Image (cartoon, rainbow, N blue to C red):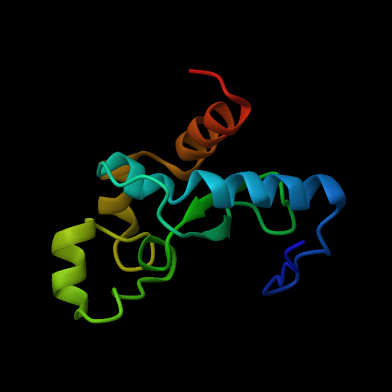
Length: 113
């Protein structure tokens, strides 16, 4: 079982939270899915602090603006689009609001179409 380390002041995840995080990891980055890249490794982004059920999966670039390891940030941006970290307005315009992405994520992990 994966050990989840939470940054900030989020409470320790419950068994239900951990199951959600596993489902998010299996889904991959929700923004990358919009770009046609499925199952991209992701991190857990908390939309609402201290609420583990308000979480979406984002890759390190879309989440924290971390460039792809062998590329600079500008090349990464060309390949992956806007990041939430670097340009929230363009990110929302491209992929939807965090709440819209949450609804999409919840549909996908529940198996709804």
